[in-house]
Length: 87
View 1 (cartoon, one colour):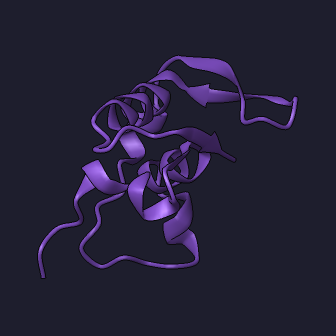
View 2 (view 1 turned 60 degrees about the vertical axis):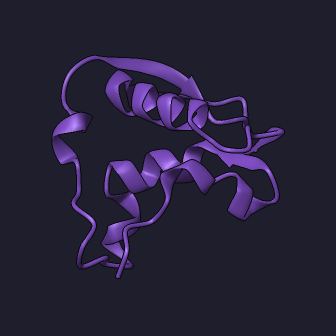
């Protein structure tokens, strides 16, 4: 099975960038209930500096800066570019 094309995340969601979903996949939150045998959990990314992150609900949650940075990077490589964001 070929790896998922990470440049098409937004395209698979009608052009919307799913920031919170991407961050939760990176930190392994999704794996708690839906294990993905071949997808590693990057738990070490949750270590280090936390910054307040508002996921769109007005509540600022302490979030690892490295997870935000990786999700932001993945957004920059979308092809085609995301036309908006979704929670």
